[in-house]
Each structure stands twice: as C-alpha cells, then as structure tokens.
Picture 1: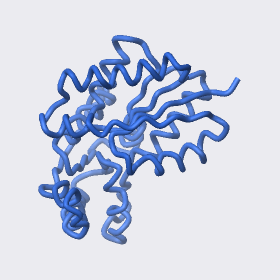
Picture 2 (picture 1 turned 180 degrees about the horizontal axis):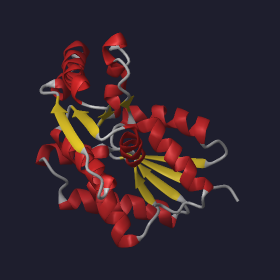
Picture 3 (picture 1 turned 135 degrees about the vertical axis):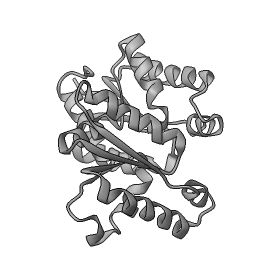
Length: 223
C-alpha cells in the first residue's frame, strides 16, 4: 500500500523546495501540500502562537490524519511548540521540521548557535535544542538578525543578506555548530566561503525530510 504524507507550510514559496526534497528522499510516497500563511503571520504579529492559531493548525493536522496520512510534517519552526503539544495530547504522527536539525546539532557539539530573523522562531528553536539535549550540558547562544525579516518582506535582499551574514560571523568563533532557525537563511550561509571555516551550518529542510523518510519507512511512528 502506498504511504501518504502531508506537509503543512506557512510560506508558499517553500512548497517547491520541499517538493524537490520529497521527490528525492521519499520517492513513491504520495505527498500533499497544505499552505496556511496566516499561521505564521498571526504568530509573528502576536509574538507567540495564539490559541486560535494553534487550534487551526491542529484541525489541519487532524484532517490530514483522517484522510490517511501516515506522517504529517509541519515545515514552520515558529509554530513548532504547537506541534509538540498536538502530538503529546493526541498521539497523532506529526513532526516538526526542525527536530532532526536539533538532533544533528547536538551530535556535532555542545556549544550550539541559533540564528534567526524572527524572534518568534529564535526562542522555540533554542528551547527545542535544550529539550532534546535532555540531561546533557549544552550552551545555546542565540542571535537575532535585527531588521532582516522586514528587509526580506520589503524585497531588499541585500540588506537581509548583510544582516544574516553579520549574525553568522558573530556566532562562528563562539560555537561548535550553527543552526538556521529559518530555511530562508540557508542561501546566505552558502555565501560565507572561507569565513565559515570548519564550523557546520545546518538548515532544516533536508534534515527534516530525511527524518520524514525514516518515519515513513518505519511505519510512521514519531519518536
């Protein structure tokens, strides 16, 4: 029987990114993309995940499960805490895109940098790393690229990229590994060249879909 997965997106522009990754990493699996940009917009506006937003996300996940999805992947880190709550309370096979990235970072070092252009994404990602570390002692150093998200929304890619590069260069001497709290930052990380040295810089999309492939292959049971 063909396995089915649903990807819930809050940024329409990331749909083709994840479509390419699922075609590569989970070939033969039937995928459905659901887009609700309001989930992110409402979270950014409130500075937290509003209850109504969390309920709507839950209804989207529930509908995907009811329609036969073996796993639901939520591709937005900003609503990650709501994903955790939904999974813990319902037992549904739903996973947040940044879990695998957090685990990979913990495997690479104990001083972990987290960089974001949105405060609503920065702290959930940092908290995820602390929680996944369990009893292990880790240091999480965060950087918010002030003004970068507004520049991106305004179409000023140069100002966005400059702010992200500055944040990355600030973190590099302090940490063993850096995680990008937003997939949109991955393009900038590739422009650092030799400045990055040997420090790994991790992005969530590929790692998240690799985790999805593991879950589908294993019957869709989340960890």
